[in-house]
Image (tube, rainbow, N blue to C red; front, side, top):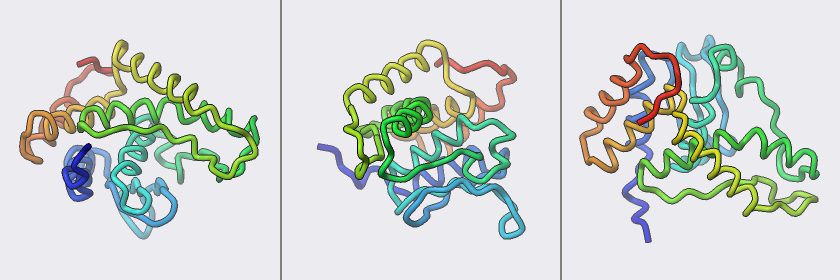
Length: 194
């Protein structure tokens, strides 16, 4: 059994913002019913990764999407992707799972780094189609292993290091953020293995 009080929203917000706010003008923000990526606008001079209901798991999931999105996509609301709510048919569910494979694989690595349990999300509770959760879980974990073997995108690697330093090595929030920033400062543009 895990102590849920170990993972606070203040901590994950501080860790994300500490690594990315200045360099990418991006902040992690708690939101309401639906998560959203909101690029900078007249209302805010920074981009927002908005996670749902103040859930730690939602924060890690939305960070995963942000870590994959390229510069052009980060200029678009919700990265310019479609989203269909519960009630998807088989074809729509397959498209959803294909789009969610890499982000959920990163999310699983972020959970591992923060010593937190990971659960895939098939996100189709009212769907017409029976979802094969085990098959999707296997695909997500396989993709996570591929990330381990081939390296993570640079921002994802920086956040993984930050989480590992804070949750596993028990460094301070500031020290963990500096570890993530140091990885970002490396000049290599290829995926990062650690």
